[in-house]
Amino acid sequence: MDSSVVGGVLVAGLVVFMVGAAGWRQDYQRGLPESLPVIHRDRRRWWWIHTWMIAAMALTPAGLAGLAVVMAGRTAVVLTAMATVVYVVGGVCWVVSLTFRLSVVPWAAERTDVEGRVPDGFAAYDRWAGLLYVVHMLTAYLASAVLGAAVLASDTLPAWLGWAGLAWGVGFAAGLVASRFAGLFNPPFLAHLYTAAVGVTLLVS
Image 1 (cartoon, rainbow, N blue to C red):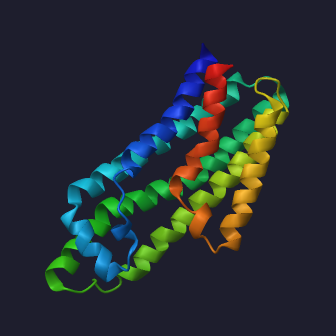
Image 2 (image 1 turned 135 degrees about the vertical axis):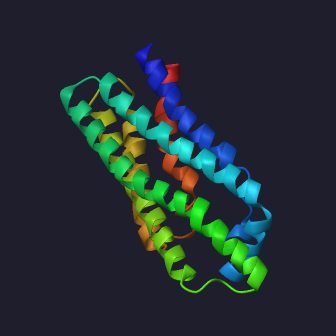
């Protein structure tokens, strides 16, 4: 029963994230002079997207904390706890970045729409928020690698899942750095993907 609850929470982290992410528009990723007026017109959509993303960042760490309890073997428990801490550190950065998107970005979007120019200094703060996101993605991948090692150290989950976590975490962390934090390794749903795979495996095992 405990494993099913943990598995359900881990899967819910990805599902809840996708509920919000489904509303994302490519126009939001254009340059600030083009994207901010669109964000201003899409105020409700913008809030919908980011509220669900914040909720997901409560679920996935909670699932990881629960996983540390149900894992068999002291080494596996310690490694899972370490993976949880790494994930939470990056998750806090991401929640701060999301809060920035829900507070400062709408203000800048309104000013840009009204005045026809991006407010002075906003670009620097936007880059800072983007850096927080990069920290989140990098730590999520590293946490996946540590979690994969935890799976290998326990008989709670199949060994292939552990090797997949190691390969996923190390490979995607390296890819994120090599691609200069953009492209294939950058979409935020990937931070919930391996943990969701662990959750599915717990539910079906």
